[in-house]
Image (cartoon, rainbow, N blue to C red; front, side):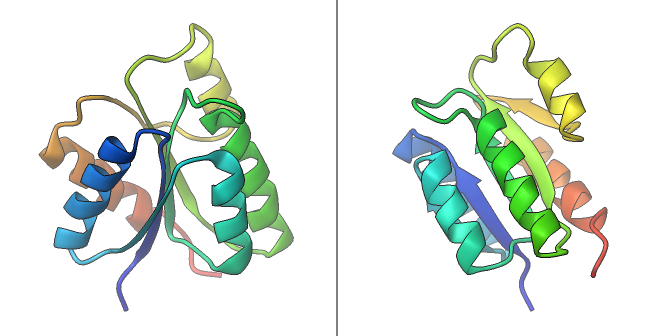
Length: 128
């Protein structure tokens, strides 16, 4: 069964590009434009990996991942997380480490590095 990935990015061009790259590799992918939309999706279905932009209007990617991690804990579900960003706030690395998210890739993405990071994050997830 293909692994499921959720992409959260307020830029539809970036989200669509990431979606296409992942679909070409055989992943089942959904893309949303905001944190609240992502929360709705994770309440509807389980994902193996969630990839989020950091800076988004309203709910930041960091806030979205915090909320999604709570949903995963409540559902006893393991999920990987990684960030992509064009520019991050000064304290973003500290916040991402606190969340347990070690991978932050800078835009524009290098497709090969991106796919390797996706595969690493999915492979590191435990099946519950």
